[in-house]
Image (tube, rainbow, N blue to C red; front, side):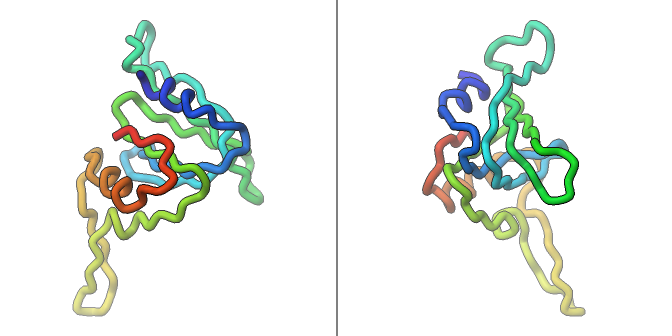
Amino acid sequence: MNKYEKVKSLCLEEGEQITVIARDDVGNIQCLQRKYHSVGEYIPYEDAPSERIGAILKLINKVPDKRYYYRDVTVQYFQEIIIYKGWVEIDLDDIIYIKKENPKGELIRHLKYPSYVSTPFIEIAEKYPDNIILCDI
């Protein structure tokens, strides 16, 4: 089953509150607490096999004084995604960064993991197991 079919099988209703953990365009992990609108297929190239079809989640993203009402999150076939039912508070800083204080007393953050590894997603799923409706790592 590809990403689109997995998300579609959740039978989410429009306006339902969800928390999405996915990667942005440059590989950073993002946590989005939005209302669900719809899901569409992401076909990377013409005649792509079905296992290579990803998903495009359309989330309601109405922020005051912003121009666009929707936010698209593209999840390719090889990318990880975790979806929670409801809005779940997840401390990504605790999972992604190592925090140290230098001799001047300034806080310095270093990444624990390199980009595009699935270890942070595994750690998130283990630390916040409640209300997960899709965990595709």
